[in-house]
Image (cartoon, rainbow, N blue to C red):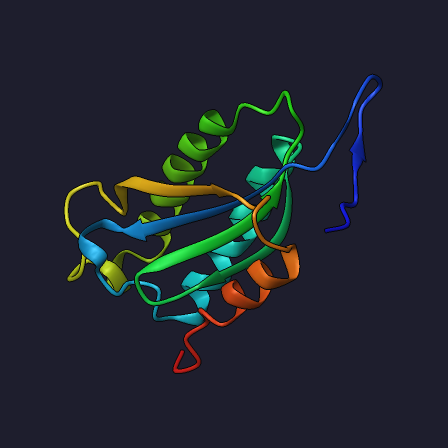
Length: 138
């Protein structure tokens, strides 16, 4: 497997992660293009503020897949927690009418998530898998 390395002043690295986050109770909330576009846009903005590069991002009705690269010093858990909080608040506020019957209280994301390093497969395989998750009915 050939790696494309990133560089810091004193290191080279290839750190890619596959992140999967489900909607609370697996509710089918990601069913409007406006919600999906807002979620993707905010994800790119938040990732950029952490020095994280989004390689691929796609949604299904009840979850999101994000393939990203990070630096060794990136605090991944802080990024994930900030992303969950910021996107939850923004989507609940901006799309209150579209999601009010599907989610209640101040919840949007499930408390648990999946984070996988991609070292055991090629990035192209992961990208194809994530791209296949798109729900074309939206």
